[in-house]
Image (cartoon, rainbow, N blue to C red; front, side, top):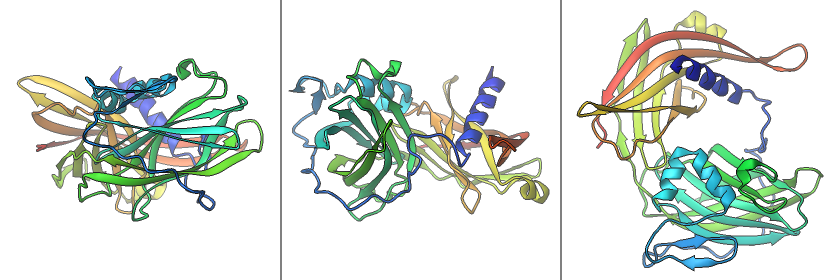
Length: 351
């Protein structure tokens, strides 16, 4: 069973690295056109526990800090265990910023930030029922630093996950890498800008611009800098970051040997993280990972986050995967893989 899960996860990872993959956001790095006037900034105030959003009204919550969001967004939160935990714990913040551009209503409904990621949730609702989707978007801070996108979830019109939304309405949850934030600010001043396109015609909307401010949740960080050598391969565990939304680890290595490195364009580690306390063990499995950087380091994200666990932490690399990406004679994506099994185990403490 575990072997099958690893194979499926590996195929997912490999497909994600295909340059011509089908995606609702094929131009994540596209720069948006000149900005339109931004909406008034939404601020979180400590005197209020939050707002519950529904389709009919905005109600002040007195007893609980859990916010009700559009059914489509709730379904997306349920697909991401980290965001599900964040939302159910009341750690995210309702924004309820709306703009109507060319008959398309875009509502920035919810956002959250910690040391692993920034997540924003919004809905798109065209007046005439025509479906629109984002094709370019950026998230920056007040200094203009751009946060790279890491993953996105979408519930489109007609999808079972869309929770009974009106015709044409879609829900989106985007996540961005926040690891560049090292000074642990109390608040983040953010700017989200996006452009939309029709799913059926050449119509475009935007750019649409939102400014908002949300609290920043610090994480638990370990920097083991541990090196383990097995089967002639040395792997370094650089950093582990535990937050309510995710558990991440930076793992570095340069490939099994020169011959393999010349054959495969990239190498990725397959790993999991365990925490052991009084004989009880909980495990987080690999969800997504970044491409290796110039130093051979990848950022690996694990689910569930295990945020409320304590004990002895252990990261185990069980496989190294060499990947070559290409295309068949008919133009279909083709992936060649080399898999090397092994055991590289690191123990560390999280403060």
